[in-house]
Image (cartoon, rainbow, N blue to C red; front, side, top):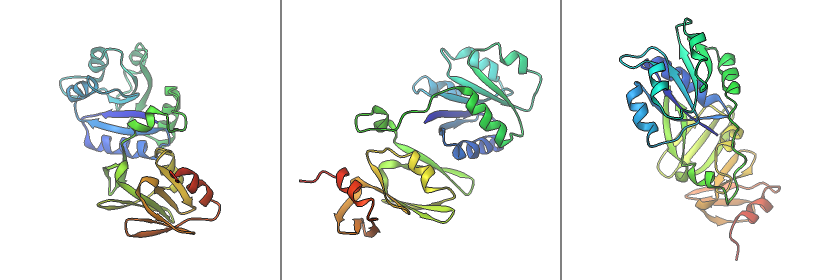
Length: 234
């Protein structure tokens, strides 16, 4: 996945971008900032692939930010001002220039233009598997972080999915396929057309069910051999 952050002093603009990022199969939002200074502090300690950056911010403009960062990642400028488009492309790191309000199709074209390759499917030896620690879900216009290791299972229910963790349940408007692509393959397995489970949470396996916590989850006949291969069977 392409790790990205948002830097914009407008709360509504951050919310719109957050929703578009959440809908993208290529992107994962790791943090967002209302000012450039806090973002610089974050980037001094963390690496990201892409920044959605507002130009006009108090005290420190988007161009000031780009000039300050050493070896900046790819940047997509997001602004209401059309007057700086030519200036923007004097910077090698700037991949595109989006005008607010942002159209979803135009947003997706900008992401394609960035040219960052998605990570390959994860394997047990992949270090990326270890670094995927959380996902963000959009619930009532709020982005809520969920610790991946706390997830017991995920159940599809029409146009929604239920994410059941050790302490909470989350109902999210998305597809099982989309969240499956964002989960580490060494820990999560689709055992039924409506269920993905965290194999580390399995308590008991019977012929056609697994027990996770207090929940009995069905295992389809076709997926049972894959499940048995995934466990450490004595």
